[in-house]
Image (cartoon, rainbow, N blue to C red; front, side, top):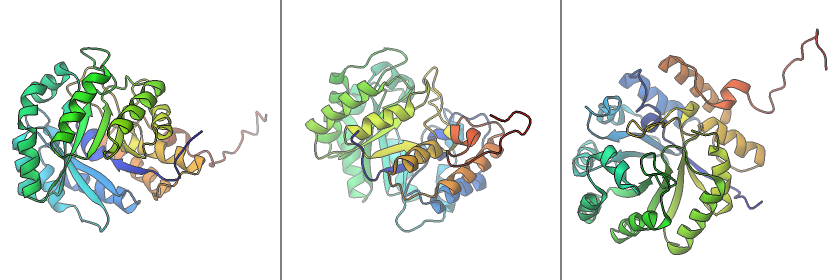
Length: 310
């Protein structure tokens, strides 16, 4: 098995993890959430999104959350934007990294951003120029890269058409997102190899949802294809409000635990992440789907029942 010595983990819980939750956390809890994970050693954090607050009320306070977050040296704080209005809000609050998302599926793009992909293509270069002029790094994300809940299979050509536009606009960091957990390991491996071969200058990352239980298997497939950057969400929270059947992301603690067991360096304190996930579960008021939260780490030995020794 070809695996990397080290990977980078981006915590998307403050954005993707919370955006589909019925319980709206207040600003102080969101700031504590971010503080917990950065103290555990996470170096990339998606603090929120600048989207229509009527459509995603959970993200209405992103400016205040970012403003109150204690910034740590070496930590990258980023936010999601869908349009020029979102980019302007990001600029106004002083964030230095934004992720602009486009869908490989026309149907999902309209549901998610209320604009066709073609319309956004026309404005992409302008948005890139505005970001550059304001010393803000603009990265790209391709939603529904491995399947669409409305259109089904998404062809490689559709993914390429979005990636090519990103690259033409000067964007060199791109994420492939499995929005509703439709990916399989063979597909991931093939797609990542193709993308890395065609666009060797792009820094690739992968964003998986664990909808059908294949999230970590897809991570391994991405690793074998040479990708070393992965999004994850504390406790396995998450889901797109505009994609039917969307469930949580791969759990941050599950990804870290797998890497620790395999000898892959992450630079993150797993125990502190597990503690943070337990606190998050208390705040949202329901059990989180992460496996390590339920079963513990592999190294956590349990006392056998004296009545039924085996």
